[in-house]
Image 1 (tube, rainbow, N blue to C red):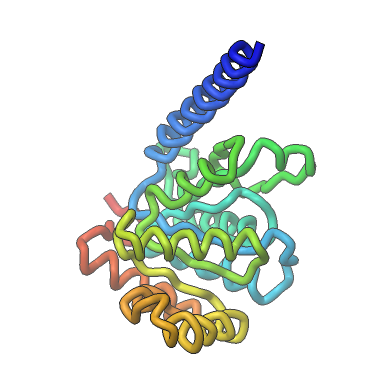
Image 2 (cartoon, rainbow, N blue to C red):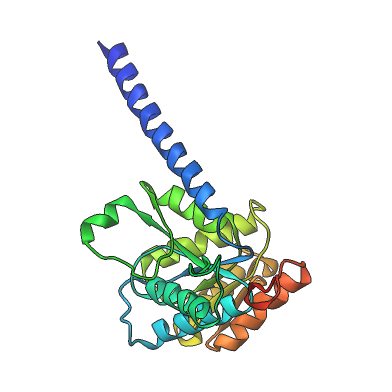
Length: 241
């Protein structure tokens, strides 16, 4: 009896694993349609449209698209919606098109199937990717990015931020720039990193070199562009052919 219960649990796990891998493969295929290089924007879904953080996310994404980047978000509201809107409007205003009428894809949202129950729709998503698990969603959000812009958010945003730092610290991904947007919000965490973790030799100075904190959208764009130009990742502005 115990043996058959083990078999049943194992088969259930295999079914879940197959479904997760299938969704990952579909997600990767969709992401390959997004022009490179790409920046992933993280931030809280509870932030209102008229909040300064949302306005900066809109402005940052718009300027990044104008510089030749594409945008990846978590596909939700708040910062994510603002970032997708900025990318979409930049493409619309500057005529970044694929064919005669269709606006070329400049952003994509990777969300969770469970979020469908909330009834929220991000109207600025040009493409959606649905995943069943947080870990697979985060993997896709990180896999194709050449830089990260992290706006104020809650536990989810902090989880994403520290996982990226850990992956870079442990050489599981290249040391690409992480721009924390808004000094007032992020300075206490940076202070903790230096006054506690670094002081007790739990992290090294080089682990913190990849983190930039600014409230200036133009400065954030400059940091991300400088990194990509140095590594010859940049395309011509506005996807000029």
